[in-house]
Image (cartoon, rainbow, N blue to C red; front, top):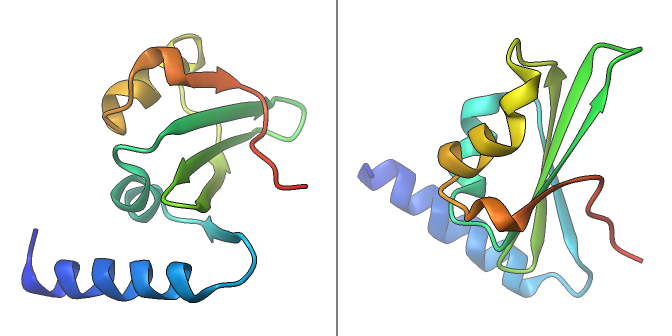
Length: 101
């Protein structure tokens, strides 16, 4: 991790800790989501095939990180892929939506 990445990570953590309500961080870029969601405590995903959209949500340190984008080509292996990409036990990845309230 670069110094700049470490600074961004620390800044992000401080903002989340100060928030009085749960924080939802929406990503449009997979690499940004991947960076923030690594080692999450839970991951969910949803395929909206009619819209051609893939959504992934990650619960980490009191925040929910969300990614929404085009459906990956290998949608049969999404659960396995997410667990490896985000370094989360496959048992913690489920199809559905993480939500607050």
